[in-house]
Length: 450
Image (cartoon, rainbow, N blue to C red; front, side, top):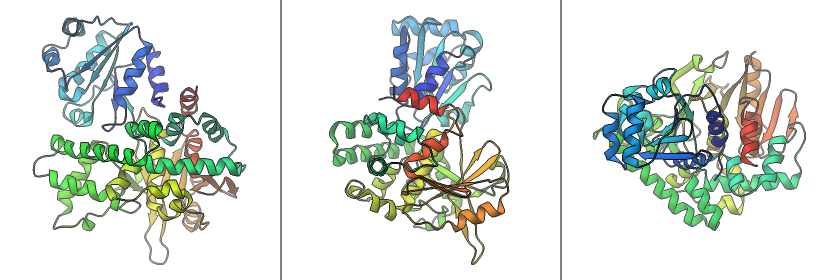
């Protein structure tokens, strides 16, 4: 299964100034598969799984001299590790945090060796030992985006049409409806690689739902790996309530039971660190960077994958296949989360990105913008309209009060249009607008559909 990350891995391989690479993201999103596929570009590929191979742990517990480490690894694995020839992949590196520190010495003393590390709960180990500054590079992965979903299903011509379409012109109605129909499939199937592969093979949503439930169980089983015993019940509660509160400011007071914020807030932070959830912070949006104007106590929360969120809620996703256009109207909070998920998937993967929104809570004058994006020196407000409604009161209010915003974007089931300083794009076209923000995205998509 080809992924957008393939382009960034290929660029890293050929970068003379590359550093050891940490591939970061939640469990089950395809990190290991992508590295193994990438390994085919090398004359030799050596994979070490520190969870499955305790016999190699001692290699990283002595001095961290790269010559000694690769010599011992070569003997244990019975495979030569040759700088400039071999890709060394250290999977589940969080099992031996000292191995993360070792990456620094590969950079300083053996820069010719290509080294990639990954792990399902890697960020918790990083919190313990840190990352050697200026010695290790991170690359963030997420579930498959809609464009990657289309690529997996062979819709290359549609991808080309979407990413090259002139946003000022309407899309052909037949193509527009085809794209929205496939987006409905994506809303039900989501972007977890195992699920997408099964959908590709069977087109059976019931089979896919079983795998989705298994993935959710895997996330639950992880709670005990990063939460203290007393916290596990809090993590489970918050995990369940994230989908319930999609599309609105997250409030701990809405969680059933006699719990306090000081008990539940750390549980949410653990889920964010695990990559299972993403916060959408309030920002005043009056200047750049957006992160300098946030209220850290004011945020929405989205789940890492909208299909998993719906399974967790117990929703019947059959409507996405039978009548996706009605579902776009009825499931507004899911569609809003979809846009956030897509923004993260298409943004610069070399940096950890936050999502932002804006609201004004003044009686008789409330307003809310679902997402704010920084495009160079512009702050672009984004409204998500799940149906075909045209009221954009909040958008107009934001543009009038924010001089750094020259235009706004509405994503909806509408076809392309533009009126004054508001651009209306269909929900399937998020990748095309993100090309403006991430200059390498167009090249990554081009490589994806070759």
